[in-house]
Length: 252
Image (cartoon, rainbow, N blue to C red; front, top):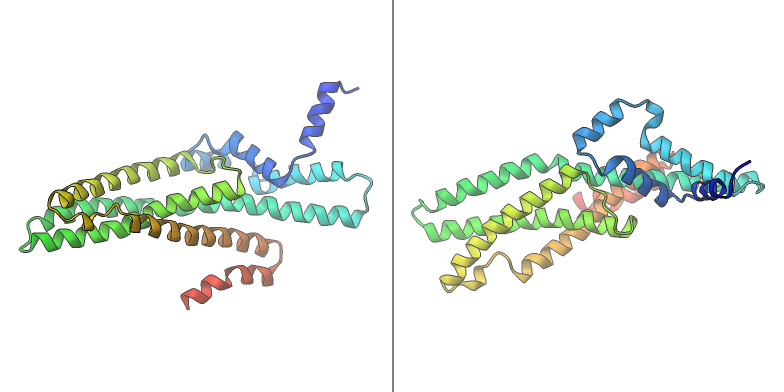
């Protein structure tokens, strides 16, 4: 016979919502690892332990227990809705991390190139113009970098109650790259201000307005990709295509 403590634990486990189940997975398995460590962790486990199927099973079991005695059709509808929402949240975590990590090597190469370009600019025939072009390009790069970080925060706050969703190396890459870019921007801005040209500063209100606008757009696209994948996998092809249609139309 179950004790009162055991009964309480059962009630907690069987009342898991999709968000609660996904947050539990994040805390227990995901967030303490780098992408390589998490990949190795999954390789060493059976296919049935993959998060998309395993976390969904936890949610489904909780719903079936909570809705015991209800009409089967109503239970099945609730199960399908919960499965889809759980799958979407997991895909959203994966997609957000992959966007950051897949582009990381390219960002590091671009940062290295900016150091080379500023050295070359100082040796050019028109140093002032070359440095201004370098600063304008750096500002564009900063917009992309900081908007990606901001997009991940928008997703985190909207879908995961502000709890962390990034793997360790995704966080470290964004932080280190941001630190280096800020250093380059601040160094240039100091020189521009001392030269009596504060209007040429890279770290300006216009930069952060552009970052916020770009972040909203990038977050929307990442969310759409996760929804598209989820809907496709659940056989909702028409709905899946409708989710991506605004983005494909914009590229046409």
